[in-house]
Every structure is written in C-alpha cells, then in structure tokens.
Amino acid sequence: MEQNAEKLKRILTYTLIFLLLFSGIFLVRAYFQGHFNSPESLRTYISAFGVFAPLILTAIQAIQVILPVLPGFLGCIVGAGMFGAAGAFWCNYIGISAGSIIAFLLARRYGTGLVQKMVPMEKYQSCVEWVNRKKSYTAVLSLAILLPLAPDDFLCYFSGLTGMSAKRFVWIIVLAKPWCILAYSIFFAYFV
Image (cartoon, rainbow, N blue to C red; front, side):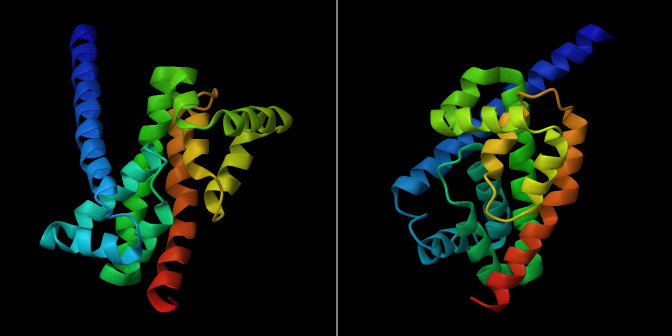
C-alpha cells in the first residue's frame, strides 16, 4: 500500500515538472516574441487562442507566480478587458492561487537552493530578517496576501521554507487572495 502511494507521488511529481517545463518554455518563447510587452500585445496573443483564451490567461497567471519575471498585473488588466470583471476574477484567482500553491510546494520540496535562485539574494535576506523579527508569520503572511502590491510571489516561495503546513498555506491563499484580485478585476474592468 505504501509502495503504491510512493509510486503515485513520484508520477505526480514528474507530471507536474513536465507541465511546468512545457508551460515555462511556452511562456518564455511568448515573452521573447514580445507578447508581454504591453496590455495590447498580451491581449492579441491571448485572443489568438479563441475559446481557450480563458485557460491561457489562467495558465499565464499561474506561471507568472512560479517564474516571477512576468508582470502579474498585466494579466489582471488584460483579463478585465477581455472577460469583464467576473471572468477576469476567476481566471486570475484560479491561476494565481494555483501558482502560489505550486511555488510553496516547490520550495518545500527543493529547499533553500531553489528559493535563492528564484528570489534575488538581497530580497531573500530581507525576507529572512523580516520573518525573524515577526512573532506570527501566519498573520503577517495573511495580511500580505490580502493587500495589493505585497511581494506575494516571493512570500509563496519563502513560506515553503518555513514550518508552516501546506494545509495552512492553502487556506491563507484561498481565503485572503480573492479580495485583492476582485479589487483589481473591478478596477481594471470599470475604471481603466
């Protein structure tokens, strides 16, 4: 029984790695082709996928958390323009939440070496010092995820190195993340 669980875990890990590599290559290629240079170029790129456009936006939002070189707000702007506030909210919420959880799990699995490659060293050191000064990292993380303009991507990776359980992290993302994304979706759909 335990052997089957280990085998399933290994298969899921390799499948996830393959999907991340494939998606990463797909998005890096699009990045170098200039599809992420402006809201207009990203909108044109996503529109080319037709009925699959919402899935592409969701995937882009997930990967922009995992590979924190893509600007996440760009997907929020484009989603609101293409799918309205509600459609943008769901694409962005699902994608960003999935990416946040994957970043946490990658950090948990591969440790400090991976996080130091994903996060600039000065940012990494400041996060370590910041967490060491806080009495309740859970409360601080919850507040940071809730508020706009916090360094969410870095905190997701960094949280994977702490003693926080995956279950607690998922609950923080699921409960705190939608409010900021909802505010962005409404703002970009109706005021931009």
